[in-house]
Image (tube, rainbow, N blue to C red):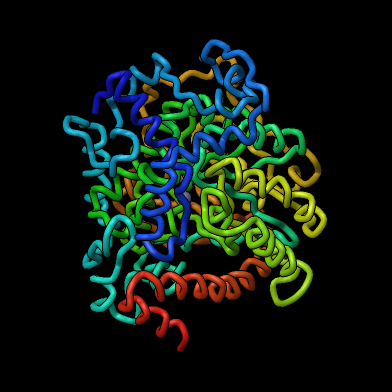
Length: 491
Ligand SMILES: [Zn+2]
């Protein structure tokens, strides 16, 4: 869809208010709708982002047009002032409008060809139908869904080990002991400079799951992610419940997000995380077709619920962090690795992480991006090499081959997922767009130690219990019908 400058600014403005409230694990879809509406209508978001800015508004500077210029802005109001780069205008027509549920654009022959190739590969299991609605109302679906969970639907029963052939297990935990796997969802957020400055100052890298619409809306912020040496993955185009979409829309949500990351950030992503964790074997297979490895988590901070944009006081989120930290020193999960779900969704979630960081450092030996904990040194087909675990924890945290901030420019980079299918964290992935045949997946990287692999397997068991708890929360509040899922979990 081609956007005029005015339409793009309008889309950006809407996106700014909407993204402020996107989170995961919404217990009640109506509640999040109310949350959106309340903050959008009150203009509270615009007021709140000032909190992180200077109390004295500096004179407005000319709009930044490069990544380093944008990264240097410290005033949150200026950070979040919409901008429109000519190079983005030139490629915007190749993408769905920001925040629209993605579909293959009419006339996009490249997307059509990739989609045809994935379908022809036969990797999409037959007989799995779309579930519920895009905003996560499964009340009309679950009464007829078997308790045995034949689709390995995480939202229903916490399943992360596929029941259909040729699909890799979801990546759930870091296999390295005493290690916090650091991941942030929902970026790039326009207020993130102070947070990315903080990570830089602390020599800390993370895995960032970017929303495609945010990348198109905030391209210089997305570029900062790669320039700073973080690990970039996909978090869909419109942040909806992926199991609700027909096959082609699942494809489009992933395809256009990976494509915009390639065009704007310059790398072909090979990993993704489903919004709300909503994944089943059909969605896994389509992601696999694009060379995207599915990533979940062991621990959830629920930080997106933090006031004032969410509904919980800071003390509640503090307690969530504290309980994750406590597991490191006591109980069956002590000294195992984790992957923690945290958000770059607004200034408050980022501030909360910064406040918690010293406590995490005190409790865990290592805090690492997924590239390090999975010993994945080449996470993209492009020539960028990240440090492995041993190198990272020895202090060699910087990737080599990263683009320079002054020169990185968005352009039509001819996204081609074919090369991505061989770049995974958990083993060699075949099939999908590159091949019509699939191999059994899921073997751990050969460079992972035996002790680490054992830790991972132990962790996996305990994490299922944790996720089951979350699912029960969802089940009891979406609709009575979903309580069936909760019952299944209890037995
Ligand atoms: Zn998210």
